Image 1 (spheres, rainbow, N blue to C red):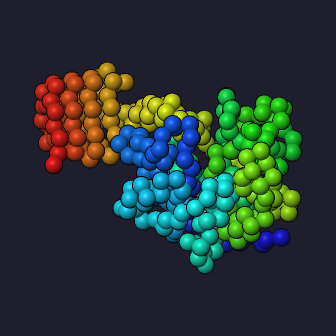
Image 2 (image 1 turned 180 degrees about the vertical axis):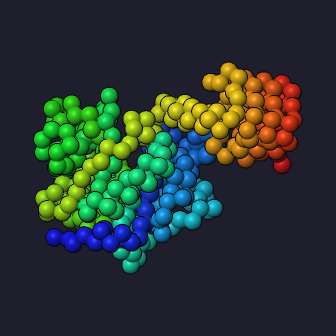
Image 3 (image 1 turned 90 degrees about the horizontal axis):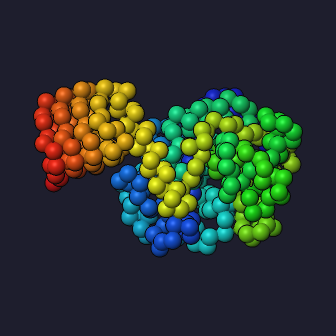
Length: 331
């Protein structure tokens, strides 16, 4: 059994971002993680979540369309590896082993198609794992409609000891009634992780190496493992289809607009405004209806933007008034 040294409080962190999936339900030749959401690819949102977390090494596992993904991530501080054959999430994580080299510590595993997660949720999850004495932690969530997601299996009632994860395609009718789902995010000791990945098999409906199987393996070996339900329902949703992409856009836009209102920005016809995450606003700015704000646009204090205007990559001076139907695009 692996001895845990989490209590020392100084174990380093690495991360593995799984981005090898084709995304069949997107009906596209473009890799799923490269589909855009509010001006940037899905994987760009995920890497943005990790930017301020204390993670020493980031490894992105690519697969389908790896050349496109590689070109997109040139500006990011990440190590890139290719899963030549898509043999499942467990095999994808194992592909990151060489890139991590002699790393010894905690590994955060996250999917590249989960743009709705919040940085604060990941930070709390990592902190909980580091202080819990566990070798493996799983981030879970409760969904009203858990269809399509792997279910968390527990030994008894909610809150009881985790027993494993079952993918929906392998689940029984009773198991499919469970509402606690696996978000696909793990915090796990690096030594146990790669030992477990070497040990799992592919005896399932898909014939794939499931990353989820490391949970059952931990339980069978008596390794401390647990699932914590820090993620809200909307954070847990991944993007698997065009409809999912549209839903994610609605949720992220609502978060962005509410955040700016809390800061001191006024919106007219609030739900009609499109605003990307890299846009910077100042206090007492007034945003008219049906406005589009894209890229690294900045708007100075007290400025007023007229209805139906389009601004991309421009700087609006403080106190300015932009007439309705304006189109301003930076160089």
